Image 1: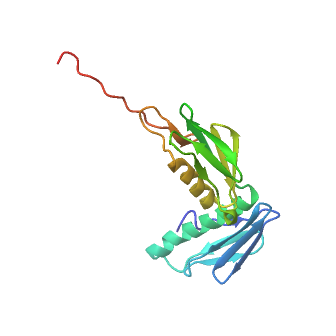
Image 2: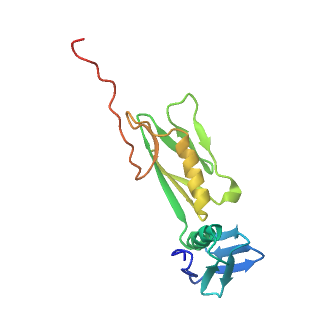
Image 3: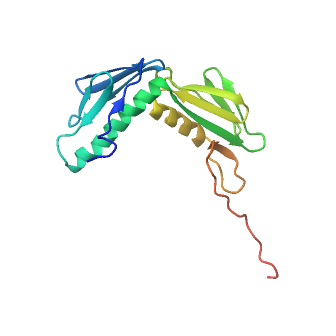
Length: 183
């Protein structure tokens, strides 16, 4: 039995969960989220908790069991607490600036790079200082995807460590060229 899948998802106060025709909808103070569920999975909600059950111990059903429960739990956490990713910018002259609802990066290219989240994604971007970017939202996947797109505009390089990285990301540094003495 899946250790994740068999655990019920607790529904906190102020959150509404509805299940109909294979779609789970979660509504809370930070927004509304919905997720289609695989037809093999059965999702039941009694107002206090959500349970996911599977029909048998088939390999696919075992995999979907834990996945479905984790996705529902992420939606409940997202509409109550929300998700946040912090990015740091390293490098001389590298910086970020808020531009409208997006972020404009100056990261060593001839042009500045503008990243703007789509309005329907529910993702917001803050720039508390020129070397920090904070991405927030209710949907864990969309927050992570937008943060990954910002990071991909200039990944940290291994020699000097310059670029955009996640807050607690450790970049493995390489040693530069070493010249052979006496040849």
